[in-house]
Image 1 (cartoon, rainbow, N blue to C red):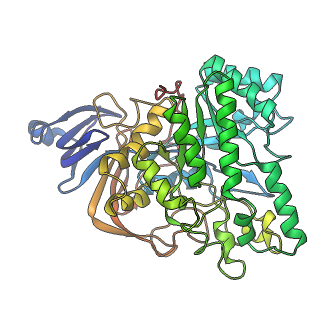
Image 2 (image 1 turned 90 degrees about the vertical axis):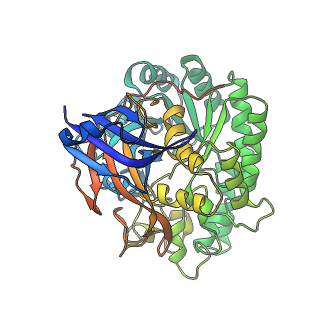
Image 3 (image 1 turned 180 degrees about the horizontal axis):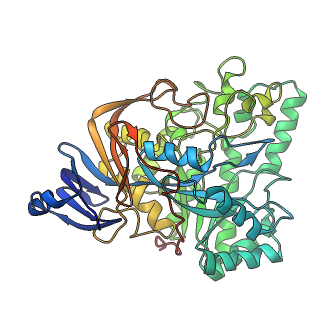
Length: 474
């Protein structure tokens, strides 16, 4: 086995920061010792990384991505190869992507299709959630089978997108009951899609076609209402673990906080776009430029009565929000977002962000919104625990996979298509953002994949992760 040493760094975990050296044996962390403990091993190590003045953190885990997702007559522009390379550039060493089943399709065939897309293509490790777009007897049987035999232990349902992914309350309850029986996690896109479709049709009838109306027809009230409804259904189904995805609204977060206060297995994630981007600065730009930021749930105003941005940051500090993911679903402006010219409802929904999550959340540390430990907890450790990958992933500790990021707090990162930008997109949602801090070195299972401002990994290095049940339940 080859040996790698990371010396003179400060190892960050959810419980603190300590000066320590890290010894890697092949793909696994062999030991974490006090500075100088491995001095005698240094001459025989194949790789020695000097982390003086830098943080040593677990590799980031993004548990909500959409590589090659078919949507709105096109496909997400990142393949599993380009998307995982971009993720590595951002200090992410594991993604969990969304395999798709639509109404009338086979769940197993949907999962097999995602395996075919990803196998041999990924630069980092990956797992799958399974979207259940058609709840029936066969898909319920498949949920049990995937949980018990395929290492897919979480299932995403939609209260939005009637005719595509939408499930009604009865279907959702049946799926939740099945998940409760087999111990799986239910992930929920919580928006009242039936009401939203009425508002969209009314807006278009009035001639309101610009991108700004995407946000105006998806008010936070309908996110909060759907979140509440999902929580009630989860309780009826036996306190099934419920994870609400891409939360953007302060009033929806209030529903999560109330449920957690009552001891329910209810969790939520937010995304960097909802912490840093405002509807005024994005979708409300003149002309069609706002299409760059069309995503669902939509971007919100910080000046709304629910003070969305402020309350999401507070929710992260108080663990009302457990995780920050990206909902990475990139589309180019040319020939993709442009499908919605003259009709905002036809703009493919999605923002590319898998490369920038760690950077943007670290800026929250710099600005005093989060502690250093909480940054690691929400981006690395809790995702591993929530989705059955801990302690193999999400921690710098003996026995864990050697997924490690060396982070330089004394350098800066400028985001933009002519600066740091490796996603397969013709624009950046964060163009011109300057972040304090920089990814220095990234190791995936002991192999250096990013070093000296270069990608040195390889296609096919990433392995499929068969996940266990959630390790984060009350």
